[in-house]
Image (cartoon, rainbow, N blue to C red):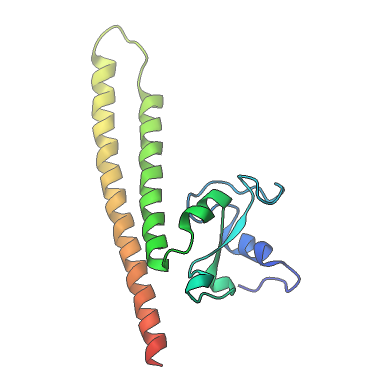
Amino acid sequence: MNAPANLSKVGQLRLRDGEVCWLCGGKLDFAAPPGSRKAPTLEHLVAKANGGGNGLDNLVLTHPGCNKHLADKPRQEKLRIRAKWQANQAGIAAARQVRADTPVEDGGNKGRQRAQVHTAQLRGKLRRWQLATVIASGAALLATGLAAGLAIAR
């Protein structure tokens, strides 16, 4: 990333990652006062307590509550938490879609039956998405481990 040198770390991360929380994917409010619920905070993927640095490759933007939740956990644990969180968010979105698509009243069971079929289809899609997320997070953990192993070998 070739960000202007006069940008703060938050500004550089905002350009790199967008305006969403690394953990929950919720919108960050860059105009919010520091410490408020939606204000961006810097999260160290490898905690400073565990020897992590302040380089942009070790930093992401999170909400204060998400930052506190991640605390000084190891990087692999943070990646696992993020994958689990994102799978859960996808399930919530699918459930909301089912409720939105379910007819309120059609004078019989047809609407309920359609909703049950639709729910089953969404559950199948969600399971496939969760599996893909687990595979992707496993690949990320493997890549992180390989990179760490190569760095140690050098």
